Length: 380
Ligand SMILES: Cc1ncc(COP(=O)(O)O)c(C=O)c1O
Image (cartoon, rainbow, N blue to C red; front, side, top):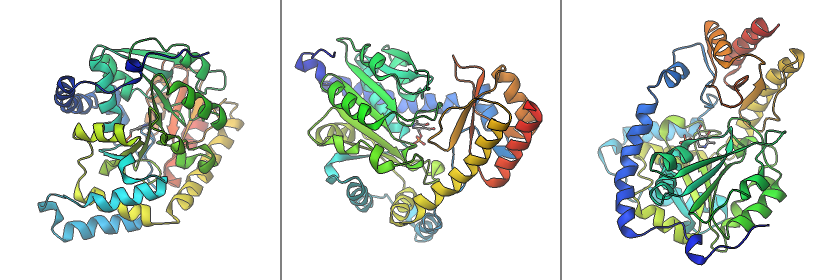
């Protein structure tokens, strides 16, 4: 059972002095993130290969309407102008889609800015970030970099979040519980009823950061999203990105849906300074009604071919609800990655402690065909 904490501990927000420090650190951390891309591991993930299946991008995107909007925006001379006011239409569209009023929305440069800004706040408070392992590390790494604690909680036998074990890690320190649903790299979702109960309970004590970056790719989006829980002033942020299903990773657009109070505080940290073409692309994407379902269908059809091959090769895999697949190679990751690279296919980095597993993204049909041929060669 969860125990209730004193009111002060329920507040994840911090004093103005610390807020200013957080702002300065946020911009430093952006550079830190950029620098991290130059590690040999990151470099390998972006090598010029015939099939880049390492970063969970969506080369089926973006919507032609989004591309057209970007070109129109630039031709109209918008690159020379500050995009003041241009976000209002985008925020209104997002609010309508999410079933909330605009004051619940905070824009973000990719969803990464939101992850890092929240990470800064908990790091500055020497707080805790509880997260699934293996999991997506952008938020917990920032908490750790600023002197807080990252608390990894192993996924369960189905490679899903172990909600009870995560709740058991809550202490009296300021805490954010980070849940990516679906999870990266394991590609699994959590049962929506169990997750809703967990969020309602745990958000009484701590901030819950629910990252739904890949949820458009799962089955039954409407039955799985917990965005409806942001009402009632809960300590909950639901994060979304245009980098995945919308195929706009290069444009850096994301947002959070949260209580008006938390949204206002996040906006005060200077978040969401989107470029004019990015805003135009996001607006056009949201207006393109059939885009999400059509793109999801293409990705799922390609994914099925990969899963069929893995079954044929006798390789166990997690129940994927995303545009990537996590499977057991039974071999050292570095060797598998090198063998795939020799076939001009890049796969994701290793995800300790599951180092005999590999994550491979779904790309365009020709890229996936190349990857399947490589897998067949390596694992037959
Ligand atoms: C689970 C998850 N959340 C968030 C992100 C951040 O993506 P972006 O900053 O492009 O929105 C990623 C990127 O791969 C991710 O896997």
